[in-house]
Image (tube, rainbow, N blue to C red; front, side, top):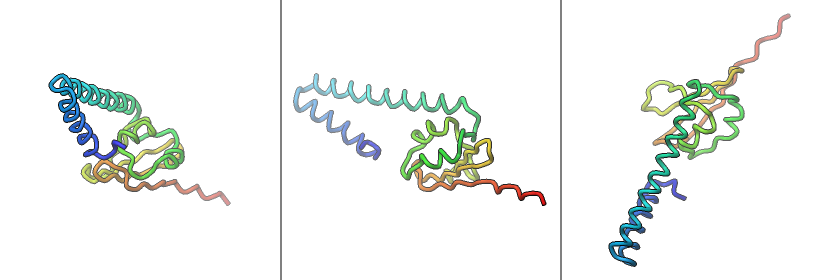
Length: 133
């Protein structure tokens, strides 16, 4: 519900207006306190996810196939990082928002984000070695 950036700020403004309208200055102070608490919770969540992702090797994931199965369009990087357990390796220009994660078997998942949201992804597997004759 709050995935759209304008929605959260709209709710914050509505809380401020409702607090002031219903209870005056004390209501405004209560609404402002609630908004600051919500922002601190969001910041704490982001720091926890980044700390966990930063502790793993860059661009490595346990299973690229399982990651591929759990992805869906519209995920934010903050939702992708707990799935991967590590930060992604940047491919090309950082402004392109293209990242790759590889697993030990050689399979990889390449993610393309647009304005911070997952737009597309591709599972890439290494070709199996040709059998000896």
